[in-house]
Amino acid sequence: MTNAVTASTTGDFAVDVRAGLTKAGQKELPSKYLYDTIGSKLFDVIAELPQYGLTRADERLLKEHAREIVRQTPGDVILCELGSGSGKKTRWILEALARRRHTYYFPIEISSAALAVCRRELADLPAVGIVGLEREYLDGLLEVAARRQEGQRILALFLGSTIGNFSSPADRTFLRDIRNILQPGDALLLGTDLEKPIPQLIEAYDDPLGVTAAFNLNLLARINRELEANFVLAQFEHVARFNAETRSIEMHLRALRRQTVAIQGADLAITLEEGETIWTENSHKYSLEEVAGIATHAGWVCRAQWIDREWPFAESLLTAANVE
Ligand SMILES: C[S@@+](CC[C@H](N)C(=O)[O-])C[C@H]1O[C@@H](n2cnc3c(N)ncnc32)[C@H](O)[C@@H]1O
View 1 (cartoon, rainbow, N blue to C red):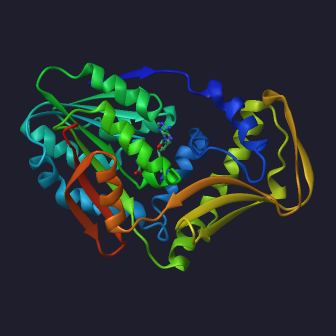
View 2: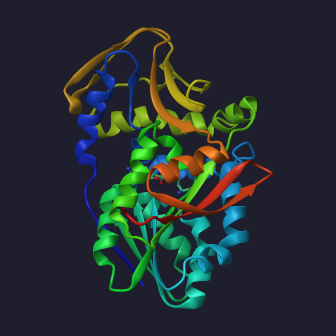
């Protein structure tokens, strides 16, 4: 059975674009807006690129350890996933859960296109009911918690190192927010990309085919489409750089010349200097100890960690600690 609950999340787009592009100092745009229909499709292509080992590492770990993850989450479990994307990697967990009993899966997504792919991708699974929630992460999680029946426990997935898109300490705050919505006995499976050599990271976010560049530039194209703006895409270039202080890969869009851009839908005109950048995404790279540390700090107990050695990446199974 598949089902869907939708809610408009685009109302804030103009407000957020205005706030980000009029910020003093570094201009920025929230990375969640990278994922419209085109962006979600481009992200699925990025996940297949030889240089982007992250998704394959995540999937290898899930495939190999799904049964153990499910064994450590006993009882009547409902599964939800924050930012599910295509949901492709979740198949292994769902298969393991459905072997035990009929299971409900709630992918939570702001991208309706990603949600549609996710429903198609997993439609063949027997004994699984899929209820897509077109919502922001925490709104979706609140909805799942409200639907929980007596005796059910929630297993939430936050895969693909999407946690790294939050700058520190927002990642800790977010883990704490999830913890506050869940109950003792609930669990969170957190996928985090680990530190690795900088040239390898740069290649992963600046591939030679230019798919990641297209993914990034599509954000300006989206603003043109949805907010009647006049960004000239050829006057911007994609930049991926490592910030050693925050241990993050940052994606930026750099203006190739001085220019003024009108964004009618945000009632805004901005001037960019030659070489000035708009910061569009942060991808923090974690150490293993750091993952356990931020989880503990946010009220979780780290039960187990599995690490992919081919592409250093960790899956951490966290359970909600009792609130003192
Ligand atoms: C980096 S992709 C990861 C997709 C998938 N989980 C994976 O591991 O391949 C992040 C996903 O989260 C979704 N997303 C981003 N911000 C969101 C938000 N605030 N609320 C809900 N979904 C969000 C995006 O649409 C995108 O599909």
